[in-house]
Length: 336
Picture: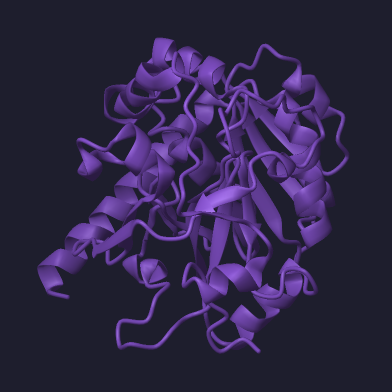
């Protein structure tokens, strides 16, 4: 990488960090339990709005994997989720009524909390409908994975977002609070993905799956990005650039092997397509707080009256992480 390009990226990183520092004023602590944080704790960060129905299973899932503390930014929820989170002993919670869009879709808020509280910790940054699956996750905790990453000198761990969906109309089976969403949304696309490389930041750019073929069939280049770097050994000088799709320094984005081998990676099973999808799409379209003038939610809403069925003859039902590895959607790399 040229000296000029390296210098520009350093300036960009300083700019995002300074922006996060300014945006800290938009956050007010609801409950701050960071005094209980252990030096070696694995911690999770998430921004949410009106997702109370998802929270019990989300917390249960990640507690079981070994997350010890959760940091939430509640963007003015009205469904009681803020009170629910405030009562959880392993949660620190902040509230804001400010614009999600003007905070770079929540990245500024999360960057600030990670700068202040994440330094030296393995941090997991996910939405409340994203569930990390990694090699040996059925028998090994997140701490086993991060210990191996530490021993291997690896600072970041990549995961492909895998959209999960039911067989049949997505609003046919109701989802109940606390339920495992994959009892309903147990299917995924085993292929139908395209990959390119972002030359500036070095991260892969993955698109495809059911959202591309159903909602963006006429403009596949507009389909949502599926590449994520959710797990990072955080340093206060790091910053997320575009959600969890990319970071600076750019070396954190190299979660793949350019020379034909494989690095360990995972999948984020995405439980977006439940019976609440149509209602949520309408709400977010009205708020206009999402990327690119909410074009993604416009595409969803255009299909919402048809109660879309994402299942097709190439759909595959989820079994376990080994199935995802066989399909080439994740890899155990050198971790044995």
